[in-house]
Length: 534
Image 1 (cartoon, one colour):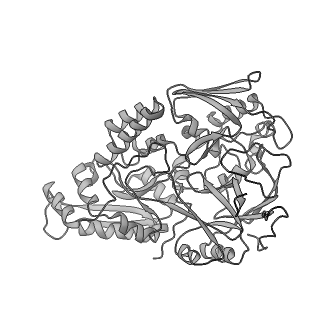
Image 2: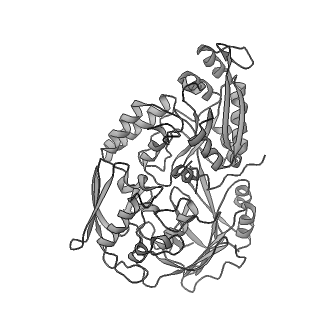
Image 3: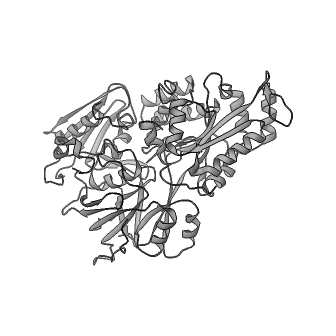
């Protein structure tokens, strides 16, 4: 089975918001550069799949957010791993609030002024239960919040009912984009009819094929994420689902920029007509076992022993052609408060795994191990998208003494199993949050077990819970120290076994430079510069 690693895995995770966390074309030429300084006037960018909604509050996938970020603005943005000004020029943060001072002169695409009241109304809608926004909890936390505005002071204040120190990063994400009054009056139309204040407007839309955006005249309030950036006069997002087709379009100049995965990465790396930009995503792919009562993984000794059989390096080669980075934490170095809690990447030692299982009471020599007459049987679930990676894990767990059956389908089937039926024992979970908010991990490792909650592995880790609660009530160094404790607790208590940090690879056939956003899953349109950097 050939494997296929793409950004969809980095944008989709399970059911409802969880499906969004397990998930996220014309043939014309690229167009000639503009007249000024070799700037590209018409830029085409690949979408690997069509978007689900252009309503920032309801969009769930990477491809929607890629388009949304060209149409809408936000209070703040993420640049080089730090929060930077955008619609807000400054802010004051406490553990349970952020007060923003807005820039003057920003307008919606219909000319209406972007006032504090407009910003407040948009943020109120995002968290309104009637909106059913899948990512609202990532932005505001789960305890509730209020938004107030002061037009005279030109300020907006967001306050959470309980301390939530991830609020500032949450408001920097595309789901927190500010919707203008025209859109709030007709929210049902926002899915296909944008109403933003961003650098572009949607001028042509052909579902499943391509979307043409035209630069707004006079736009000048983008985030401070780029140096000497400019906005191409026209941007066309082209839906090209096949990796090889997209790679061919890049090499022939019919596509300007696109993310590529799988074997085509190696092909493009050796092609001098394109240039590459690569970056780690926010989280990791981690080996995890079902801890529900009656499952082998309910015993931490079994979890620790089985993990000894799996190598991060070998999984990377099998699943991702060796193009990702081996992990030392469930967070990636791109996340705030990252801490390398493992002495090194996971290395396989099948004999050590068997010895550890024997010490835990399992017996059977060199064959399938058993305990109290019950064989060590595991149901390994995964996705065909990285099928060879799961086949590698299956072979290693078998070598350690387990009878392992593998079920790999699509991400929807995996989500239904993890967050619904619960009929599984082991998987490699793609924790790749779109927002660099450390508390995103808590959605999946704390609280009620599935199907009553999103704690799909039925974990119970009081030390993690305590550290996470401390982190959410703190700022600065104290906050990061607490998140470091939380990362260490998950690993030390055999709850998660980080394997790799996914790395996305973008290629360009045109003379521009650019940065990446949303955990490296989208191109940051505000960072486009000429190849000379001007």
